[in-house]
Length: 69
Image (cartoon, rainbow, N blue to C red; front, side, top):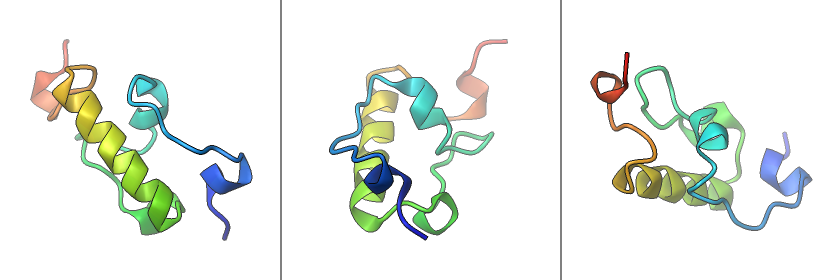
């Protein structure tokens, strides 16, 4: 199964696109593994880096308790 990012010819993943990044996290905001997402190793590393940077920049929560109700 080919990578989604490779099919759409996406070179880099932006940490500011939180809606896209949330598709690759669980309900508890854990990062989904590459086997389940279907990303190639290159794009999985980029996705993980982008999610971690978005968390650091306070664009995404680290845990479910940090979300607003």
